[in-house]
Image 1 (tube, helix red, strand yellow):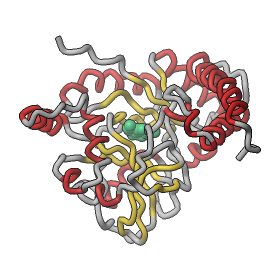
Image 2 (image 1 turned 30 degrees about the horizontal axis):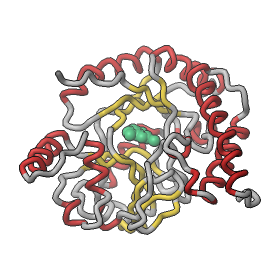
Image 3 (image 1 turned 90 degrees about the vertical axis):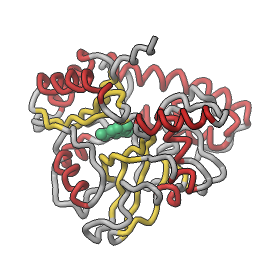
Image 4 (image 1 turned 135 degrees about the horizontal axis):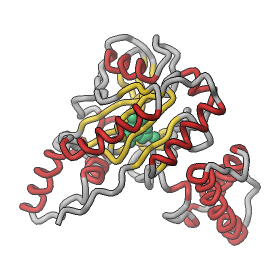
Length: 322
Ligand SMILES: NC(=O)c1cnc(N)c2cc(Br)sc12
């Protein structure tokens, strides 16, 4: 934690830091011309987190620390994510995606395969198991501190209370509300004179962060799990193999993942699911492309917020229904 600045000095420093972090992010992800090394970004980001922690009243919605996971509710006890939940860098065009894969393959010639996965429009969660038993579940929060929502998560049928092997593991994924459940919930709320949820993601977040688990249980939530905090007890050495192993352990996995050996295969996957997204019973807002080799993922590493071995290709916003 930096030496305690006065609130006025902290505000001045925060106002200096925020535009720098936004500029550096833009350079790194969109222009592929980072003007600072990762460690400069990381240390500046950590300084902002430290100053905002000292003076929470100085946190603004547009702060780079606030674009993951949203605010923590005081009613839930806090969970410290020993291995932070990372976010994802976003790209919005196939050219930017091409730049990402070219940059990775240029810097790491050993990269031969990517794994393509659907980007689920829900709320990120982390599930911790000890000797195969579900012991704690939490929201992402700000990536380092989340909310303990174990009691609510225990009501979701797709979350196994006990794994098929007695391993100790922490798994990350997305909790979502199926579109059909969302439509029924809003019809019911409007019949009762209540306002409807804006979209399934908000409905899932609102349902998961209920203080009463019985309300959560009534909302037909589900999950797709897709990452682990560490790989010690797993047999696989690829991302695609990890998903298959999580499925064998009893987790719900989105089956639409696909290994890609080249950019054409990645683009074909993107085109396929951009066409099929409306027919899915869950929201997706893009595609996640990851280096498939887990050891290479570790070697490539991450900044303080995002992996450098993965990217999210975001679909253009859906046309509002007229
Ligand atoms: N398949 C994936 O890795 C995935 C799917 N859906 C999401 N909303 C996210 C978010 C992060 Br961060 S990763 C990921």
